Image (cartoon, rainbow, N blue to C red):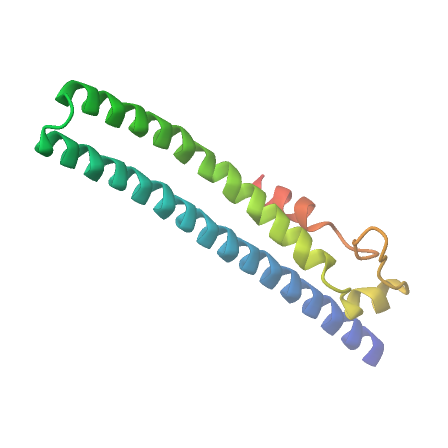
Length: 137
């Protein structure tokens, strides 16, 4: 009976550890998303400010300045559409890093194997990517 309780505790610890890994990966990816979004937005604001200054100074034709601003806006919009892809990639990288950062002793003991150092994967466990993929379904 004591063996059953310790096995259950190990399984619960493993489950909680996996949940924490996913939470941390999501938070880090979220921070990455907003950092990239702020960077892109501030770049556009700087372009718009420069364009407004050029229009007010009268150094260039207003038409040309507005066309340049429009082109900058299009370029920023294209780069903004890449941010979710970068965020998803960062999330998966964080999951892989969490999975590769040392084996979980409770899982290794449960399966009777040590963590595989060659593949960076833990023996007897489900890949973090697979768990994340199932969570999306």
